[in-house]
Image (cartoon, rainbow, N blue to C red):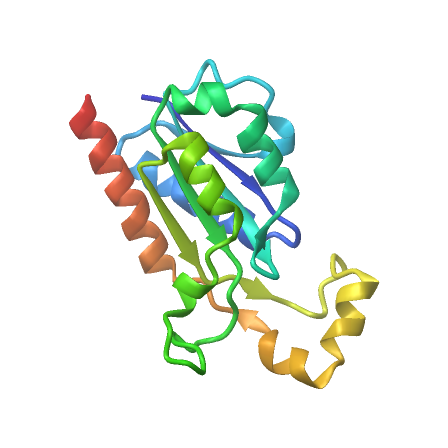
Length: 178
C-alpha cells in the first residue's frame, strides 16, 4: 500500500504537516511520501492519497483544489483523506463559542466531499512567521491593520500529537483494508 501525501502550501506550514503525516505512516509500516501537488502528474503508483492545503480566508489554496479536480477520477478510485491548515493562535473556540477547526473548514470541502468521497478530513492549526522572506507585500500590509494582528498571531500552532494521531488512524484503516 503506497500512499501519496500531496500538499499545497504558501509558506511551508502545510508542507511540514504533510511531511509529518508521511513520516508517521512510514513509522507505522505504511509506505508513504510527501510531495507538492505541483510535482505530481500521475497517481498510478499510489494506492491511497492524503491531500492537504493551506486555507486563507476560509478557502483552500487553488493549487490543492485544482489538483483534486484534475485527478478526480483517479482519486475516487482509491482511499482519500483531506486536510487543511490555517487557523492561528491557541483559542479552541471563537467569540461565539464555536469550535475553531469547524468554523475554519475550507468552503471547498463541501464540493470536494461530493466529488472525492474522502474517508475523512481534518483541519489543523497552522504557523505564521511575519518575518519570513516568503511573506508577500500584501500580507505584510494586512498584518499592520489592527484587526489583523489579533487574527494573525505569529507563532507555530501546529499540534504535532494530533497530526500524528490522525495519521496513525489512517495507517490503521489502510492496514485493516489489506
